[in-house]
Each structure stands twice: as structure tokens, then as C-alpha cells.
Image (cartoon, rainbow, N blue to C red):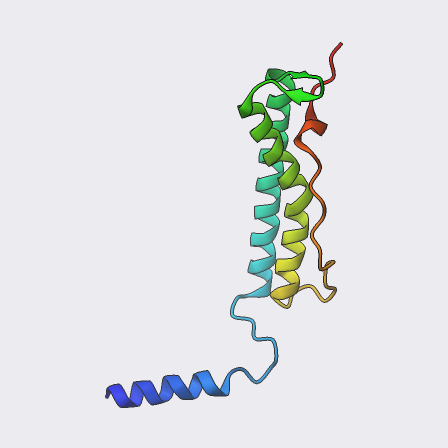
Length: 118
């Protein structure tokens, strides 16, 4: 029995898919999941950015606490990269036909979120 299972598994592996792009997941469900993950990430980053603007301060263009710098780094990274990663995932999943740029967007310095002093 093991030999039959092994033979069938090997045969399936070697023959592959008839198409060059085999979708394992339902494209509509995958698109909805990608949209959700993007929105969840961007909305969370937006809330964190509001917290940074309320709670953090900068001196000479630098955050005064490590927490604020790390939080700002997370926000700029999410805002810069999540849309690109979503589009690349959709492209690699065969849902999006146009390939995003090979290089992901540059991430701005966390200090770009330094609150302006009044």
C-alpha cells in the first residue's frame, strides 16, 4: 500500500500542473484576504502614528525615547512597504497581471514623523 501511495505522490509531483501558474487558492478569497491584511496594517500604523504625534517629542530632529523611534520606524516601514508587498503577493499568486517594481519602495527615516514643535 505504501508503494502505491508513494508512486501516486511521485507521479503527481513530477507531472506538476498543466498550467505554468497553478492557483491553489480561490482568487476572490485570496484578494479579499490581501485587502484585509493591507487595511489592518495601514489602519494600525495610522493609529500608532497618531499616538506618536501625541506622546513623543524630538530634539534636534531625533526622537527622545527609543520607544518613539521604534514606533516611528514601524509606521514608516508599514506605510512604505505593505502596499508593495500586497501587490507582489497578488502578482505571484497569478491574480495581478502587472508585476510591481523589482525593488520595494525606499523606507523614509523614522524622524520624518517627528512632531513639529510649536
